[in-house]
Amino acid sequence: MRLQGRVAAVTGAGGGIGGAIVAAFRAEGAEVVAADLKTDGLGPGGLAIDVARPEDARRLVEETVARHGRIDILANVAGISVRHAIFDVTPEDFDRVLRVNLYGSFYCLQEAARPMVEAGYGRIVNIASISGVRVGAERMAYGISKAGVVALTQQAAMELAPFGITVNAIAPGPVDTALTRAHHTPAARANYRRMIPVARYGLTEEMADAAVFLAGEAAAYVNGVVLPVDGGYLAAGVRED
Image: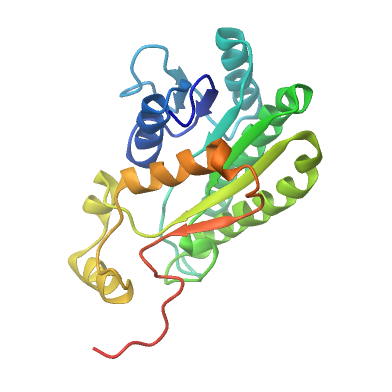
């Protein structure tokens, strides 16, 4: 088991990618504190937190340490996905997206890093997005927030490496979740399949397996990396049909 004996905290754990990461971490031997805005779907011991509140980020880490004596791994998954064109996004929309996706990732990372520094060990895995690397239609607030997660990952990787902590990110492409099934139109799904070399949406389990790798010992020399798990979307250029 790749995470045997490790203790992890996972935000955004109520479903989708976060739920798959919780299941994968546990299957690989880790003790996991699962957290989300609501406890629905988290199972026993689930923790209700709002990552946009610094005090909730602190409570997540304190609760993890109180239950298990330490925190070895943080998976920063909590986020909101919304569509805004440049003239449609309001100041309130922009602030809300950045507070959850970027500020929330920073607050949880900062709090988890404190006991990790004391222990001399840690693995932090952020969830960025292909939208944080390559721009797309109606991604004004979301894309900027995820580009911030990329920068956060790289900055934290540099600062925390001397303390035995690695910080990496996954940049998922479109993933088959209840949310994308509800909100991606047939035209949007067809466009993604056309642009992705493997011609399909990703699976939550595929994102989770990448998180297990980055959280484990096999990735000890991987630091500051943004790993696309996108079927080749970011690598692809013009193709002939």
